[in-house]
Length: 460
Figure (cartoon, rainbow, N blue to C red):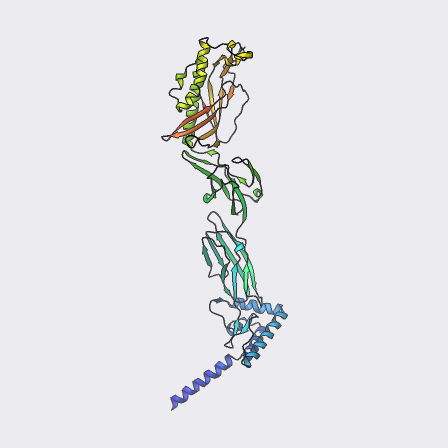
């Protein structure tokens, strides 16, 4: 009998407690007292928080401070809660779609839930993105996104949103304060600056790879109008590379600044003007290749000029060049031979032009100067092979002497600079001269070759 009495007593107590706890009228009185007394701890204990929603005593304090500073907002909140209390008393569905707090269907005072998302305009395609409001939790996204990113569910209050975007070659961070006090709109889109600047990069060579801070960007900037790259920030180190069958060319390294945006540059590939940064690779960086090429060019032209001065084509027999390149001078040797034999004279040509065609050469090569910072890569139209063209200057005391010319002023110290156009290629992993065009009759004593990658080779 006693056990039955205790059971009834416990059930009655529970009913009374539940009724008191879920009494909107009593809850509302307590809520008003808490706000008036600024009792943060009691407010946090009083309200119900939906599962998955972040709200702490710190945010409870934010709300009390907000109501203290915005009395009209607080009065509106109380009016909403009184209306909901009355509806529940009359057993009607409360209108509870607005307000920072509301009475739910269980007659409990609940804190409002806000969905916070990061606007997609805050970033571009990323490698990894971390977004956090809470100290102990961050949203992680990988491999880019073209949609808003939901950061989480939060109660009303003041928050600090942090973003960290990893783009592989650069990481960007930004932060912003977020105030969640709107009593009608509970979806908050926030913007951060995690996308930097955008700029266009181009190359006059197709299939050019861009590198930023030594990270390869999977974009061919050799396209007609270049490629827009984002994000960019001051201080990034930029360069471009182009791979060929014989090796690669690289561009100069540039340190990016915002001042580069909108620059107009000339695109040599199609003679157009591009609003962007020119990163065409022109620099030949293979140090062993430089030595080999310098020896080949020097050796070939030393033998060529000496052979022409002595009318001895056999000097070219062991030169490192294709048969076609050597054969390009056959006609010059034939003319010299005809002149020596008397088969070709000044009178063989009309209008007094014979003096220019009838003559001989003297002197030879003193030094070759090659600029490896201005290389080009044409394609052999017949073989489709990758070629290499370099700026070359030959310092010589080599001259063409027309028949009957006064050469008393010429000495071994008289300098003549010659600029050949030389095409090189690789055969069996060895550099070889594929073709060479040269004006053997040019006289120039003031020519100068400048560049940052000059290789000079003296002839002993």
